Length: 142
Ligand code: ADP
Ligand code: MG
Image (tube, rainbow, N blue to C red):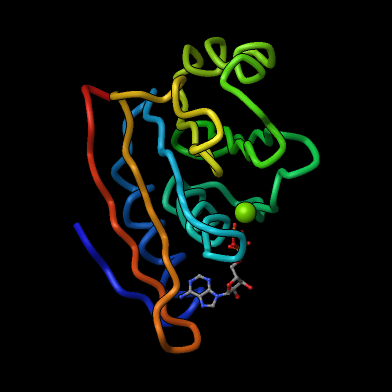
């Protein structure tokens, strides 16, 4: 499915509608440049899951955990990771088994770990200021 948004609020709203529907164990793999709006979308995911905390970029921590919603949210930022091996070292499989939603920014850096089973969200800038093209693709069983 393809969407166009014209503000961060609209991107967040799209994320919230997805967040309201996600099942336990879902991986949401994001692609798109710095400043595309991945974190804005995840902020919406958190809202849609009923999480009250404000989502901030986990760039310096790799993963942030948010509880208090319908499901826990694990928000990963793989910007600094060079390979999927590093993802396994930080306990990726444990996170997968915890019955939450894993939202993964810079999923292109850990592509081998995310083959198949995930929802993909790609965000690109449009020609107009504030315009974004957002493509969502469902893959695999999760
Ligand atoms: P990323 O996580 O992809 O690096 P962020 O979500 O942190 O990106 O930042 C997106 C930036 O783009 C923010 O400064 C936001 O205000 C701006 N922006 C402008 N238009 C949009 C839009 N339609 N959707 C999302 N962000 C937008
Ligand atoms: Mg980000």
